[in-house]
Length: 278
Image (cartoon, rainbow, N blue to C red; front, side, top):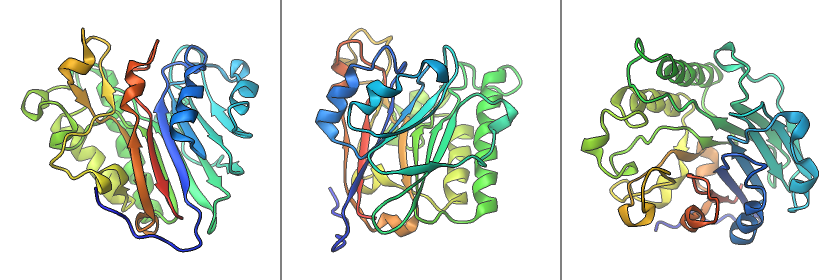
């Protein structure tokens, strides 16, 4: 593992991201996550909960006094839980004009100055990797294209972190078999190219691959369809943490909580955490 530069007198913050796959169903598992990772900021995706039913007080009881959420009944939904104060960003785009609760941005009151934090849940894209035959795949490509154009218009990210379930595994060793996955949604060349344009548009640094070289396998998701997910280990890296160039030098460590996939009533995604000295 590569060691990042240390920054004297800068208190590191721990930023975690997890596709929880229903915040009400898996609310008890948050206690396990907090014990294991002790995050300062926790970003959730696929909360599947309308705002009026969001379990605000229960989540604050896990040690997060600052909570923001955007949700809808049955699917999608994002939330940010934080020990650090923040302000919600209200002027960020409504992606593809759908109002479908896939993004929440906040400005964190962090050591060293504010940090712009973006929590994304990119559309999965269905099963058929064809824009014309599959509207869900077209939506996914349009969403990522809009995000790239937005980042390009804003210029390189500054004191920023972008996390979430981006539903694309871009690198060869982000999937269990590059060859067999090339025509499977999440690893097709058109998706990988689109994600690369987004990353380049914001001059984002892939924080997980800062610590884990690109020639090593790295997964954050294992399908429910696998009879024995651990034995088959046919995973994909769908969950990401990107940081701006001015924060990349402060990366301290990372953790992919693979054990969470074995929790009772687990999500098919596992939590990912990056520690940064900002």
